[in-house]
Every structure is written in C-alpha cells, then in structure tokens.
Image (cartoon, rainbow, N blue to C red; front, side):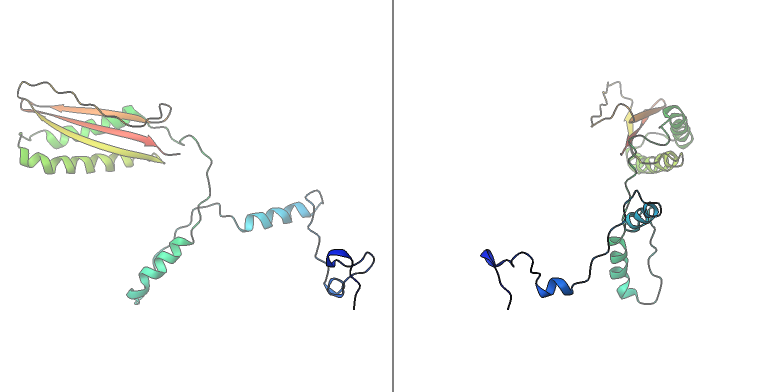
Length: 194
C-alpha cells in the first residue's frame, strides 16, 4: 500500500504504479525543425476542404432509399471560406442594359395592349431576361427582375424601389419599350453577396 499525504496525493518521490506503466506520449514536432513544417501543414490540412465538392444522387434501383442517401451525402459537404469581399467580375450595367433592351424590343414589337396577355407575358419576359443576365457569368450576384406594363391613358406614374444597398458593388439597370398604347419597363437589380 502506498503512502499518501494530505488531500490524498502521493508523497513526493513516490510515483503511483499506474503512472509508471503508462507509455510516454510522442512529442509533437516543432515547426522550426527541418522536416516537421511540412508534416504539420499536412496534419492541419487533412481535416479542411478547399474546393467545393459536388455529390451526384445515386442512380440505382433502390428508389426508396434515394432520399436518405442524398440527404446524408449533402449533410457531409463542407465549404471553404473564400474570404473575398469583392466580385471577380464587376457587374457591367451598360452591356446588361443593351441585352435587356434587345430582349424587350424583340419580344414586344408587334404586341398590342391586353391585360390578360400581359400577365403571362411579364412572367415569360422576366424569365428570359434573368437567363440572359446569368449568361454574362457574374459570380456571387443575385438578380431581381421586375417587369411593368403601363397602359397609356394620359395618367402619370411614379415607380420606386427600396432595399438594402451596397453602393460599391450593387447596381441596377432599366430598359423601356414604348408603343402608342403602353409602356413596358424592365428593371434588373444586381446584388452582390459576400
């Protein structure tokens, strides 16, 4: 039986038998040693993922299990921070405005004012404009497309939009197509997401 001092701790000079039998833990290498720096980097980078991974859904005959496998695969994805506060390619309003104006002119050149037709036409135009703007390849931008059809009956109208705005990177574009019976106005807002 070993002798213990106050508070149940072993007296100095006496090691408990369990501590003597335990193997020594290997010393961590210092980053200042020649070969250790590369090893430390490998250990630190082993758990991190630097690229975004893409996971395809399983295409086998077990359709009942597809949902479970697909959700579990998505839950394991990790995305690395890019630490970018500015876009790779800045939104160029002039080129986008020309493309939106071209789409409006081509789509509405022979269209007469009709309330029922314009409700569906506005959705179709918004989709076409959104696809055209996305083809420019502005990464990390979110786009909002508004289409307004206004019948000409001698009235005045004010159109206003309000939102949180970053003056450095966010932008907007307006294009107008006018006939004798209506005015079509297309607004595209480009919002940069950090």
